[in-house]
Length: 305
Ligand code: GLU
Image 1 (tube, protein in one colour):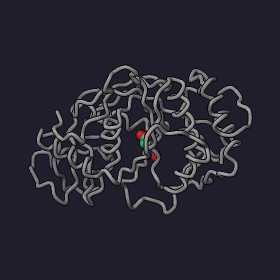
Image 2 (tube, rainbow, N blue to C red; image 1 turned 60 degrees about the horizontal axis):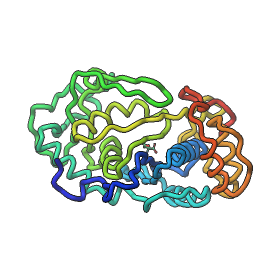
Image 3 (cartoon, helix red, strand yellow; image 1 turned 30 degrees about the vertical axis):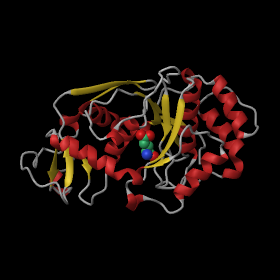
Image 4 (cartoon, rainbow, N blue to C red; image 1 turned 30 degrees about the horizontal axis):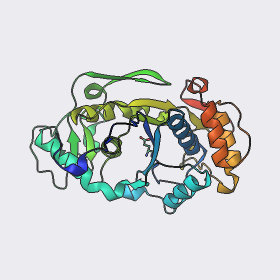
């Protein structure tokens, strides 16, 4: 068990109004929010609220070199413009680096992580790490930190995408939790924060499906409770590429919030909502929310910009 009290998730003091759904929207500020991000925000919000659950927002900004100037501000303005109503203050991962370091230390004491001095070139063309530094017992400072994986299948059943499995040792090898430049990897930060924030459900884009087994593995090593996953199909542009900053996806135009909200719900194949103030539209969407209508695929083809 963790001894540091700050590494303990929130608990329900009187146990009376137990919440059995806590969900989140966890954007990385690597660019302004685009239509694909809006789909994730809307789906995670409606799904949480339709289950009478809580919904939190977390800014995943540990990868400082990849932060795009102004995008944090655009995320926060978007939350306001679409009238999403988070149940707690928005947290920023860059303010929580000591928590991730404490978890690395805990894993180190358990012999589950080690320092690695291999360069990317040394990994070979298939990028599967062969455990070269596993038994070298290098000092942790100024080296990448990898977590050990086992030769076993990790499987989970996604609420939309069905059952997915991966043998981490055969498909990936021991993976990085902290880079040599000191940056905490997304895989670690996401697992620690989902635990500390008491998350029960993860709703996010299907581009993150392949990360899930790594996160489940880490959660298992740390003794965290299991999560439910729902990976949403990704909005694709006219060229069949997923909307992203690299593909010049347009920033959400916050003056068009009601129209964009209506389009996001249509992309998720939800029943039509009337154009209104975003808060009213979200209420209607929550009342009508039906995940059986969301396409069970990983790509949504349309004219998404
Ligand atoms: N921060 C990740 C992203 O913006 C999402 C993480 C998650 O939902 O688990 O792609």
